[in-house]
Length: 400
Image: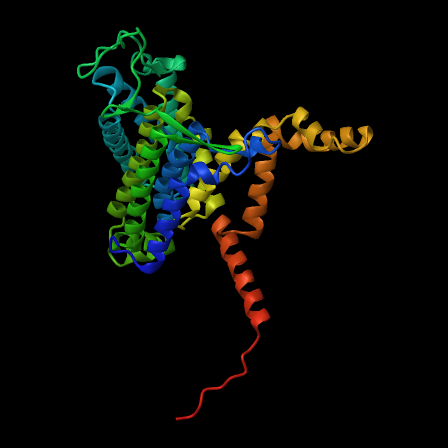
C-alpha cells in the first residue's frame, strides 16, 4: 500500500484509526457524568489536535531529521493564517484556495528566512530563527497594521469584496467557510444511550489532510533525501569534508517544514476565520518544540502524540477548578477535604503549566525518546512478562 513497508503501513493505519474514530475515542465517559469533563470529543478541540499535529509533523522533519532546532516556526504558522483570511476576504469562502495560498506563502517565507539562518548552525541558528519570528510578530502587531489589522487581528467583515462569493448572506450575516458548499461548522450529533458523539465536517477535512501529511512525512523519512538529512544530523562536518554541500538539503528541509506550518495556519483560519499576531509569538514556537520532544523527536508518530497530549492539558486539564476538586474529595471529612484541595489546587486550572512542566521533566529524564519510547518500553515489558509466563517449551528439534 502506497509503497510502504509493513511497519509503516501499520503505523499509518493506526494514525488513520485514531483520527477517523476520534469522536468515539475521545468521548469515553457518558454525558452528564462526573467524569464527562475529561471528554475531548467536541469539534473545536479535535480540530486543534490534528492541526497542531500537522504543525509538529512538519517541525519534526527539520528538527528530528537534521537536528536544527528552530525557535521561529510560529512565523510560518502566522503567515499561513493571514494568507488564508485574506483569501476569504478577497476571493471566496472555499477553503481549498485559502489552504493552497497558505502553503505557498509560508514556503516562500521559509525560503527567505532559511537562506539567511542556515548560514549558521547550532545555537546561532536557533537564535536567528527566534529573531526572525519576533521581527515577524512585531511587524504584524504594529508596522503592517493595514495588512494584519494589528493587535485586533484580521477578521472577516460585511464589506469584504469577495469576487467569487457574496459579502453577506440573505439574513445579513458573514458567510461561513465551506468546501464546495459543505460548511466547515456543519456538525452531526449521534446519541447512543448516555453518550453523545459529534461528527464535524471541518474536523474530518483536517483529519484527511493530517493523514496525507503523515504519509508524506513517512516517504520523506524513508527516502534518500531523508537519509541525507539523517547524515547531516549525525555528522555534518564529516560530510562537508567529503566535499558534499549540505546546505541545499537543509534548506529544502527548512522550506518543507515551513510549508507544513503554513498548512496548519491555513487550516486554523479555515476552521475559524481569524488571524492574530499572537500566532507568531515565540511562545507558539516553543510549544511545537515541546510537542515534538515530548512525543519523540525523530520518530514518525511522536509529534502527533505530543501535540495531542499538550492540547489536551491546555483545554481539558486547565478547566478543573476548586469546585470540581471539592466534588472529588467530598467523601472525606471537611478538614481533610480542604487540605486536599489546597494541595492539588496549584497543579490544576491556571496552574496546569506547572503539571505539564513536571511531566515534561520526567519524560526528558526517564524517557529521552519521548512518549514513543515509553510505549516501546511498555510493550517490551508486556512481551517479557508473557514470555516469562509461557516459559521454555523444553522441546528440541529432531536431528535429520
